[in-house]
Length: 251
Ligand SMILES: O=C(O)CCCC[C@@H]1SC[C@@H]2NC(=O)N[C@@H]21
Image (cartoon, rainbow, N blue to C red):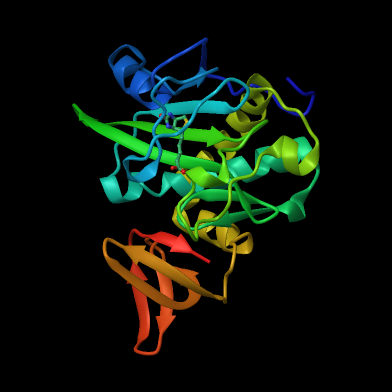
């Protein structure tokens, strides 16, 4: 662990040589995991991304899931994806010293020099009195999927190594990420989403620019005005502002 990062007290750390999906594994382990816990997989055989896409998971990149047991309503729990984005950015900046290189793409990708370097997948299941929440994070540390694997028009994947020349191990990345997440979780619990929203907007990619948001079969083009207090994307269209709760965004 770097001398800057201290592993957070009360958070368990499990490292798995190989696993199907750290999200799936964390949710399976939830009944016997009472407190917060990180599950780091050094490779995944069935890594999954948003919108049921596979997440290629060879050795060398980061595949980690933070298991929490939140009790708020689901729409509040979901806002933790912004805490995870901000924590990821902090971890990247502490490891690289390059604050200007990282930006955040709504809803929850991290971009490095404009390419996708990390993605987040939240999954949950109900339990007595609350939820088991898996905050799954994939980071292209040493390699990125081939361009041919990416949907036309999507942000191109990049790796930390390819863009910066820095080689960071998954374990070292977790050691930077875990304390960073604890700080944003505390901000969320103590000050609400407003604290996260303000910081997220500071680092938002393409804020004030024309972007496209695809929801199902509909694609809307408008100016990315802000995100609202519920985390919705606000697009200004000729008809006025539209709040979009979930979409795939294209630049
Ligand atoms: O589609 C995305 O951008 C989100 C990708 C999330 C991938 C991570 S890797 C660790 C965790 N386990 C999974 O199966 N998926 C997430």
